[in-house]
Amino acid sequence: MSKHHDPYCLRSRLSWRLLSLQAVLLTALVAVIVGALSVSGFVIAGRDEDRVIDIVQRALGRDAQGDLVLRPTTELKQLRSETPDLWFLVRDRQGHSLSEGAVPAEFAAIGSGLDQISQARLGWQLFEDDPRKPPARLKRVDTDAGNVQIITATQGKLTGAKALIMTSLALLGIALPGLLLMGTATFIATPMIVRRAFEALDATADQARHIDIHQRGTRLSLDRIPLEVVPLVTAVNDALARLDQGYARHKRFVADAAHELRTPIAILNTRLESLPAGPDKTRLLEDSARLATLAEQLLDIQRLDRCGHPFTRVDLVAIAQSAAADLAPLAIAAGYELALDAPSTPVETIGDAAALERALTNLVQNAIQHGPRRGTIGIRVSRPASIEVTDEGAGIPADQREQIFEPFYRLTPLDRGAGLGLNMVREIVLLHGGHISVADTAIGGACFRMSLPPVREN
Image (cartoon, rainbow, N blue to C red; front, side):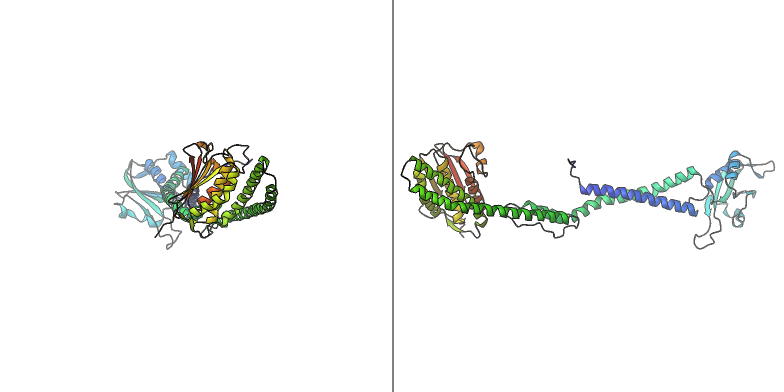
């Protein structure tokens, strides 16, 4: 059994994944830059000159003659062992100086020229001067020997703690602001990009929502659809094509079956008419009529597809008179009276006359079949454009008045009807832009009302 996965927001997922990728790439880039600079000795790969200056500062003192001397501190001994090429130059404002290691001539000759400078980094241009010339760091500090100027090299070994701090500062100073900027841009731009990319898909989804059984042959548009979604839309169109083919086969089967039934039903009616009059003949004729009605209803399913193209002006009075004339013998044979109440002048709508007459015929046949076999079945035409069919039966329970229009629905399980007639009536009325309702009559029977759009006179 496959695991169910809840839907997710593509915009949010893309934004977070892009932000994660940017964070990884930016961190890697900063690490590469820091590593490259460390290997090249350009910036932080140099000796921790501040540490050298700090150690010399704490070790510096004066002898009895006032000359600068270095006390043999533990830190100084460790620094000398770690840095074989260590050099530094110390001088005070009185002209005393102290040096250790091979002080480059360029820095040894500075003398008092930078006495007013508190700190500086001395060197050459990276790509224009001799790269073998070593840069230096100058800083004026207070010591036990007084205020002195210390110059030392910038190349050499960087301590682990200092390297970690400087690398962290580089990451925080470069990567974090960059990540915040890119993250903000990602969360603003990604939804906009996705929304614009999916605009055509939204239109396709809206097109799909309007597809129904009366719009067979409709396919979803592939115009401006992203290539990644084309297979999905194509698969949906293929499914719609298969559904159309299956529906067409179903329609052909129903139509063929109904046509095949009409001939034996007509033969059966002819033979029944030759029987002697009596209750058995009446019941058999009614059963044959119901069978004929079922065949016609099956054919109506096919006729609906061709109904109303184009619509013309239809007189509802003429339709009611025709239906009443055709159904009066059947109603009388079943024990009813059939009454027609219609204006003397036409009541017109725009529609398909044959379809509307079939709808009215179905309503009257429904009243004949389900009524108490007594009383009056009434057909009433009224303005602006409606037809009512009433009977004197038990009526329709209020909680089932919507369900009775569903196909194959029966009020009672043992009902001999097929449950297609009222559904067909509703489909025809909806096709004409009208609606059908059912209510109780004043004496308790059912009243079916077809309300249709009236003809609008210019």
